[in-house]
Amino acid sequence: MNANEIIRKKRDGGELTRPELQYVIDGYVKGTIPDYQTAAFLMATYFRGMTDAETSEFTRLMLHSGDVVDLSHIAGIKVDKHSTGGVGDKISLPLAPIVAACGVPVPMISGRGLGHTGGTLDKLESIPGFKTSLSIDEYKEVIAEIGVVMIGQTQEIAPADKKMYSLRDVTSTVECIPLIAGSIMSKKLAEGIDALVLDVKTGRGAFMQSYERAEVLATALVRIGNSFGKETIAFITRMDEPLGYAVGNWLEVVESVDCLRGKHIPDIMELTYVLGGAMVMLGGKAADLREGIERCKEVVASGAAYEKFRALVKRQGGDVAFLDHPETYPRSKHEVEITARRAGFIGSVDSLELGFAGIMIGAGRTKVDDVIDPKAGILLRKKAGDSVVLGETVATVYADNDAALVPAAERVARAFSYADTAPEFGPLVISRVDGDGVQPFHL
Ligand code: URA
Image (tube, rainbow, N blue to C red; front, side, top):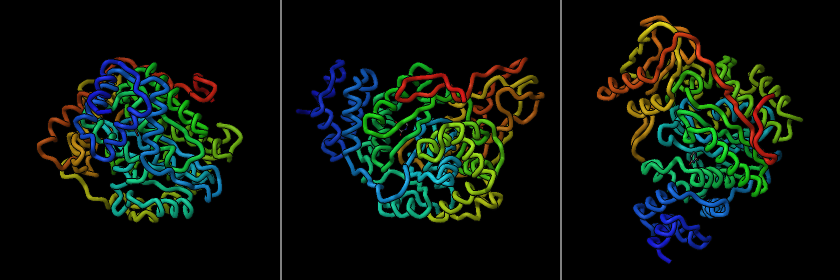
């Protein structure tokens, strides 16, 4: 067997066998197959896809490229959530402590920003001192003590995905259903969960821009999760404009803390409660989704969820004083106001443009080793459907980088479209996918 032949077979639309997939994955992890051949394999897969059988094998091999953590000594049904990625998608930050405060253990292994989308790890690391690189032993200790843990992929957890994820990010091979399915499910199946909730995004700022492709991805993810004996539910949700008002790592932490302290930001809280309610239900602490949502609302109202987040941040080395007093955090050198070009209504706020503007000012990466500026970001002052008068501020851009400031601000301005009448929107949570298939979502 050699890599060249396997790449050619995939390029020409062939179905790879288990030994062929294993040859590529093992070779890449060990370094005997170089980046350039793996990149060619990824691009061939991007164009040719994989059959269901290949996708399952690919996931299994990625999973077993490392260890599978055993959390059976921890009481309770362990449940995690994963999002396919969006702009302003900070949901994991309020969600994990809310669900843990309901008594369901949440072991969470997250990723960094990918393409134009942000990553939970980068957001957590914007909290001074917060350590996301715990060993597996520490990971087990934190979940046992606090009931929630949030770390990055270690060398032991799906190392094939750890390496391939970065390569896909810089070779434009992210938006590919079997590669996404293998990447997400190998990490999630390795972390010691019993059940999983997935947020599959669709729309302008999502990797799956069309609803149809999001449904194919959600169905593949649910099929793989259930076939590994982990009850899996996916929700397909709209990602046309950013979630909430903040885009950028520290700005998103502050917004998440506001939500945990009871501020009602409608889209963030609607999605957090649906995903959280499903996790609490799968974790056996509620009879159905409605009851799960009620439990989540109670722990926010009582302050238990915010206390859980503080305990987690403290345990993982973060300085909780910045959570309690975000005004003490360092400020960006520049703050530029973006103003409305005309009066009327905001028609849409393009999350893809905002994601790219964020990268320009250092809130995300274009290369694996780019350094993030945790303060950099965009704060929306208006969202789609809001009325505006000419010259009113619609967003503020925060940045240190002098050279990127003007082009990024222009990009943010272009992200806003205007309308004479208030636009109509579809639901935020569009459908639910589980072992019984796809259903339109309603409570
Ligand atoms: N999230 C992942 O973990 N992997 C992908 O490929 C895309 C989103």
